[in-house]
Image (cartoon, rainbow, N blue to C red; front, side, top):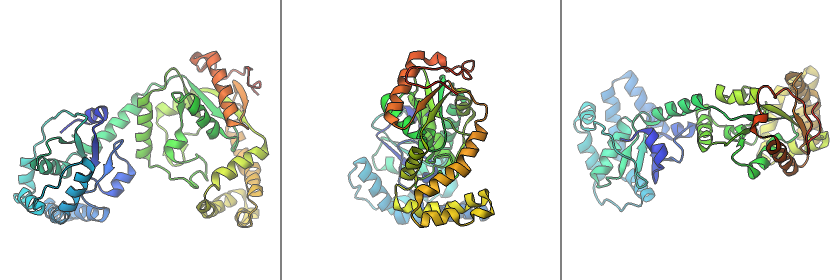
Length: 396
């Protein structure tokens, strides 16, 4: 067995997650491929037997199902790892391995530390238990000595992720702020093409735009998957500074770690602006880029109608249904999003203001402005200053 720290550092040639598809989808080690030993229904059944009957009954059911699928399972692993067909009755080998029951198998599979190399094939399950240890032993018995398991499994990886997020000391932060639709995300991603080491794109990591309609057309990440992505981004490093979009303490349903919130809350605020017509265009292009997004948006709009009051019941949905998208977006901005934003930003000072109508031009202006001042500008003492700058209009 190898520690999760060694696995993350070594980047083995193949990392296999043996957990069910549902477990894998929620989160997994970076780069892991899902080759499930049990599907979601089988995992639920075995878990129920373990809790309500006995570990022995759960083990017997798991062994029975493993015998039935072991040939296909090893075949898939062999295809991914480049192994040849073992040419053996693998079901009989499972029968032999499980013949002594759960306690006998536990005794035979006492884990031992092992180094991870670039040629290693690493298997992971929930906690480094029977799923991965039994498969490691099984594959090693077929002559694949490069196979290892992850000590502590996914659970150890989660602990490592949380530790890394908690320990992160962020560099000085610059925070892009502005009304909904000005194109903060477009500017941030244009900036990432110029200075990729600077950018922390929380909305990309979360699969969410951080608004009440922010999931439309996207695939929101789970809290665990977001934190895994965030830890991987932090591991790559930022250099002397970090640029992030202004968010609340949550991005959709994702709660931000305190170390990340400190960057947003304490960073130097830079305001992005754009005319209303441009903002409407940005939002139409973003939210309605896919045909399926229209139906998804229609399902979400009644919630905002209720927030606006009885006089708006059905109004927003009707605008969308009749192809009046620009009118819909303008109404949403003027009656809902802009008042909310101005209330939340009341009294905030900005160091500079940038026109975001052309994201690439705004990104270049940001680079020039930030590099002219250096990371030392983004300190708490300076975060409330309102200074003018070349390429930026004076702050409010």
